[in-house]
Image (cartoon, rainbow, N blue to C red; front, side):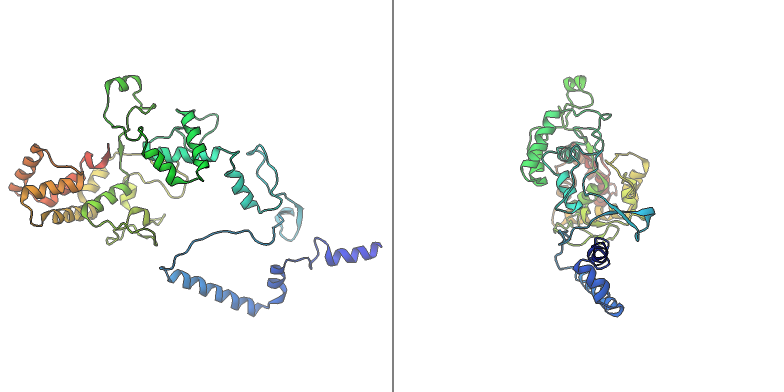
Length: 365
């Protein structure tokens, strides 16, 4: 009966006001405004309690809900006028197989499509970025562009091998990095040879390790390590990068994107508001002025000198400072020069700061 069918559609149809999930029914009909407000206050109180108890281990995670959301096109952008449904799936222009996600949410389906063994691009891009972190340049020189207009990989077989092994080992970054740093390629010296320089001046074929300058974060951590105060504790909440009592590794530094510390900007720290595929190495006079005058560098020199004194003789103190900062003993000429400088009125603190300013400290050979 047509009339009964109209009534049935009003009660049970797709657009019926009674066609609600249990969660929607509870939120929209079963609770009044006062109860909803009270529940919101309790939720906010709980969130504040979690933030206040920083010692409690916590991790954010997403799980599939019991109901799948049916996305629809809103006519003229009006949420009260739902239009035809939109199938969940990958964008057709970006994927060969743009099938829909029928039994899972679009977020989970997209994640599985991105990390699928039939989509090696994700593993290649990630492996290439890890390689670039260790060698200064990726196998593909454009880490954010693997398209037809980008330069082809210098070692395509190696890139495919690393990507395939990366996926086979459960996408483990730890295993990938262990494989790279234990390879003969990574263990090479940065010493320049005439034959290699003539055949491959850009070191594209990796006949030597490329000399690399330390980033601002690496330089800070090395200064704290030389001072003997670096905090190696793992995990925990971030600490303000500019806090003078912050001895934690730079990876735990809290940075305000609107007020980036001068130590970072001086050494080429990228903007936090735009995508940056890599760190550009810069060499400007402000960097040397920073190493000469910044309180952090001066305090680090004082701590190194105090650490080296103890019951040692003056020559042994000089050797200790070299060992703390440059990880080697001074040569005979360097030792004589340092002792002459001290005899002439110089201080061990100034010598330690001068070593922080040296190329040997700033560059990784």
